[in-house]
Length: 332
Image 1: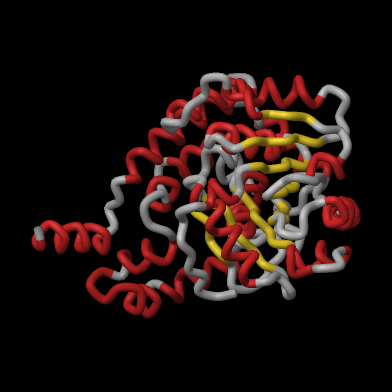
Image 2: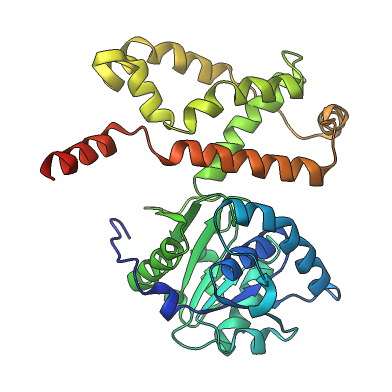
């Protein structure tokens, strides 16, 4: 599944109707983006008050959608609810599943989806860690299924990890990439399956050491957050770990960095902690989780700040981009 290259035009015309299966935080966020992009959305979820919950989450997403330049007037005009899963997916061009993170549940849901959906419907799971290969064992045609793992919240954060299974058809991957690209997302096709994919594995590694440092009394939660947001958080927003260390190597780049600073970095690997989320650790972390505002207020403030960050980096300080722009200007 390496080196996927697709055209991005035409996707909204061929994928106009999306069935959102599961309307929790991720499903409602996807719904907000799909609606703002002019797609028709059918939401299915067994919760009795699902319409109210989705409405509330859509309204909460409106300020962010507006900040992104997306239309929000009469946002719910193309929104429909259907309690019956089979009926909800029957006419969908795309099925975006966001159910509970349990393999047996996802296998059951996709077996039912496959029975009811059109043969050409794009079947995607938003699972945060389960492999497509494992979910697809329940399908008659496992080649149809692909993972489209977003970074929360999907209506804001650009990344979508497109993770094919062992039997996923290449054309399915290409269609998923085209679909997400046309929505303004940044899909990244993974070359090999890995539980948790890439972004979540990186989060898990950093959070493990964050928990260790708090448990060891080196810093508090708020102090660690301040350290991250005023250092590597800023740096990684414009250059990832490999490019950052390439720059850290000076004119010699990453080879020089690895030769001279690599041994010290490797030494830290052996010193990193391996905490467990046992009861004392959970109690400690919970006691320190005091952020001075409600979750809703913090969520809104984070999204507002995230939009500003995305705007700041969207011009790109990438010299390869700047060089290309300079060449085009010179040619005019």
